[in-house]
Length: 109
Image (cartoon, rainbow, N blue to C red; front, side, top):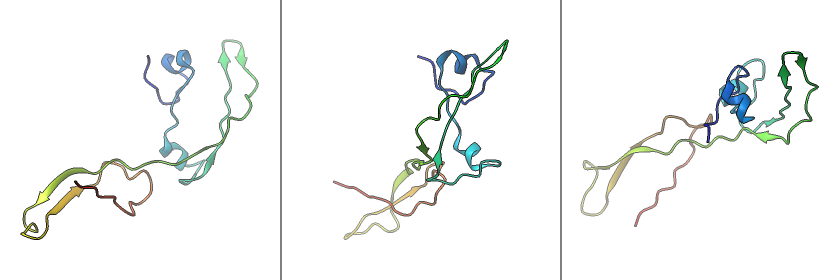
């Protein structure tokens, strides 16, 4: 199975697999300037040596909803751990998904 590739019509993998990824950063940039939660409508045109096809029907709207990366570097904070509580620390993952982190769910057993 081929890996999903960014949408690039010059890529033989995209052409042969009939699928690709549209980077969120592209949709958030000019000329689109979409925000997280915006509806994205996609249409496609096939191109060959003789020219372009007609434009496809619009695909069902997708929404720009991007989950953040999981926190990393979970560790016990020895300076705040004592006889009555255990302190923990972590770092944010590489991406917040385009929206600020507003909460954490902390589970323990």
